[in-house]
Length: 231
Image (tube, rainbow, N blue to C red; front, side, top):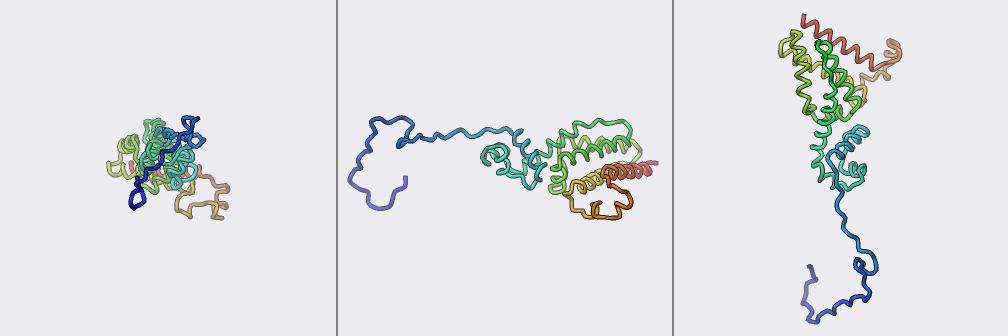
């Protein structure tokens, strides 16, 4: 207990008189506030809320305060549940990618394997822009299932006749195309040149611009280029 410096008083203080009709739990006639137990969250609740915020507002808006507001708890409660923001970013991307890769239905023929990978990966980033944003700002997409997806596509390209190195690089060519195309479509990339509404020539040449047609043609050209190297 802290007291003001000086000589202690030698005169004892009179004891406080107790109220004759004191009621337990009351201080000066007002209810005493009891300290409540902290809110309990699961990691799944935090990751669900983080995924929603990142998809709706962008990954930069993800904070303990924003999560606390969405979940109705104090920011420190979120921190105790999940740890640091870097860990949270990694976990929400990992879970999102794993859930999507679990939906892959792989065909046998290599052209179809490449097409399945490209279209499903694009669907993932369009549905969950946080994956694209995290990839462009924080590095490679690492998840439990991602290595198996890469191995499947590269294996299909090797079985088509590409040498090991070419099969790996061909996978990256398709991967880079999907990431770049989706970045332009979602609008969080840096490219200005790919915006069709800013170029009058696009309207003159193709009429109504379609990202679906643009992606499909680009993928056809890539697959044709890979096939040319196989033969």
